[in-house]
Amino acid sequence: MFTKNKLVILLVSILALAGVLAVIKPYLAPSSQNPPNTSPESSKVAQLELKYPYDVKNVTDKEKEEIIQLVKTFETLQYERRAKKVLDLFTPPVNNDEKGWLDHLEGKDINSKPRLYITAGFPSYLNWYMVRRIEKQDGAIQVTLKELRTFYDNSTADYDARVENLTLVMRNVNGSYKIEKYYHEKPLPTVNIKYEGLY
Image (cartoon, rainbow, N blue to C red; front, side, top):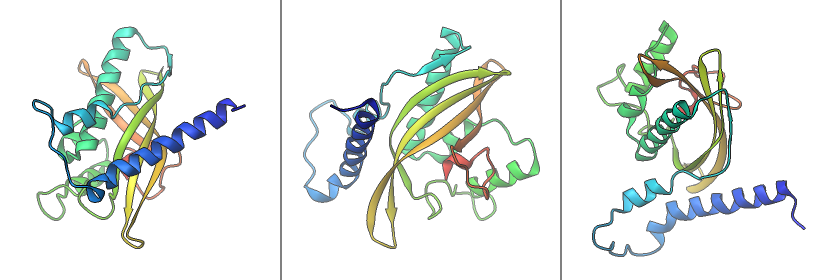
């Protein structure tokens, strides 16, 4: 008999394998034609969110709807690797450290092209995400997420997949939600917490 934990581990393992196969599939077989009036990208985006029950605390139905929409937009833009639009969803920097990290991500210190998603420091690809909890505390919204990311390791010339635990902190700014912070469960100490989840 499977316990709940074993079922969750089995589900995550199957989804991780599916994510890896989705990434390497184009290299294994010739591409087939798409049926008329369908876009391969739109169907992939539709499968990006894993629907799973999650906890909601101190949030109205209207707030929840707006929060989920921002999460969906953010994760879709990450999947599409649209750096400028991802960074536009964040609140403006509040100090020099945040400003320096934003300039770094936008590539302003070298040229006009963003570094985010195009340099070796950002090797992961988003396969799916799952909301686990939404909670309002002191005016801020905390959204706990799981993301499956696939990594290409140049040293081994192979793919690897990991489920990452992340938190999005949002605030309502002039009537709409913006991302204040995005970070891993165990954040990298060398990266500003505001943008740490992008690494």
